[in-house]
Amino acid sequence: MNSNQSLRLVERGMGMYIHIPFCKQKCIYCDFPAYQNLQDYYDTYLYALLQEMTLFKEAYPESGDILIDTVYFGGGTPTELSILQLEQIIDHIKSLYHLADDCYFTIESNPGEVTRDYLVGLRKLGFQRISFGVQTFNNEALQMLRRSHTGEEAIEAVKMAHDVGFPDINIDIIYGLPNQKGADIEETLRIISSVPINHVSTYGLQVEEGTYLYHLVNTELLSLPDEDSEEQMYETIIGGLEKLGFERYEISNFAKDGAYSAHNLKYWHDSDYLGFGAGAHSFYKGVRRENNRNVMPYARTVDNYELPIVQEEVISKDRAMEDYSFLALRTKWGLSEKRFYEKFGISLALKYSDVLATLINQGLIVYEAGVYKLTKEGIKRGNYVFTHFI
Ligand code: SF4
Image (cartoon, rainbow, N blue to C red; front, side, top):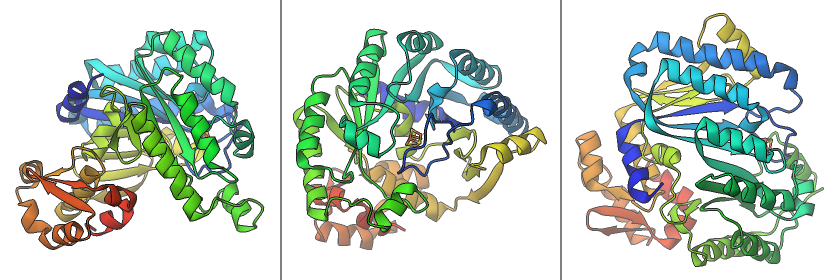
């Protein structure tokens, strides 16, 4: 998918997200709705997922007329399901919703958990993009994080996906891991340069409350790199990816040859999307919804013919303008005066005159030809910039 195709999808239709909350094992840093050892419930969950789609369509019949042009299976680990189970989900989506003929399908997966035959099966189902949770190629670190794979398996998985014809392959990389050194990042970059991928998502490790990692760090059983070392790792990976020909098109996302994540572009442009599954979020007609993240309560609710929504928020115009502004600033396309006016009927300069002037004075954003963009320093201090809009 090239740059123009990706951007066209932002404007053309709506995205759909399907959450599969199962994993082979739980990583110590993970606070997503993702659970291990629930194999006995996969069929129950599948039934509930299909039922939720049906219930949503009954509650919002007009949603069936809107063109869906990206479908993203995330998790958890969606490839925990069999090809047959994934096919059932896709068939059900097609029976209820208006999928574009060229709808762009993405699936997340973990290395070491997919065979060549399975990948061939995914291609036959129409998946064009696969996103592997690699995180690091260092086996010691992978073991410490309780990842289910080795660095060698990650390389192997990417090569297999390429061999069976996936045009778009992403890997996720985390930096700032406990005991991580700069040399490890250099090694990551060396491996990235040798594998057939066209997208990298990279994040600093977050220590989320309630995770096992949080406990280990708080009891000083594990220590994180200090701020300077983490900053150095950040600089190394960002600079290294750019040298390898990956374009930074969003704060944490890098693509080669315009292979942007078509589905995520919709989030960053604050477009509508439907989300199904335990813990899934949606943004539809000005309302954000969040589903119950616990598998059995989710399934029981749906079984009682109720939508499993636990939170619903009508987004005010002010809130929509805030969200749009900082999401747009995250991307290389920036915050455009023209687009803002077209979307909200208000001048950006009027709405945020003080904020924009302050951020320009602080050297965190620049203004060029009707568009505000983050500077290099602004990217680094993204959260500080974004709070100004809220
Ligand atoms: S594989 Fe991903 S979703 Fe599953 S536990 Fe690990 S980090 Fe969480």
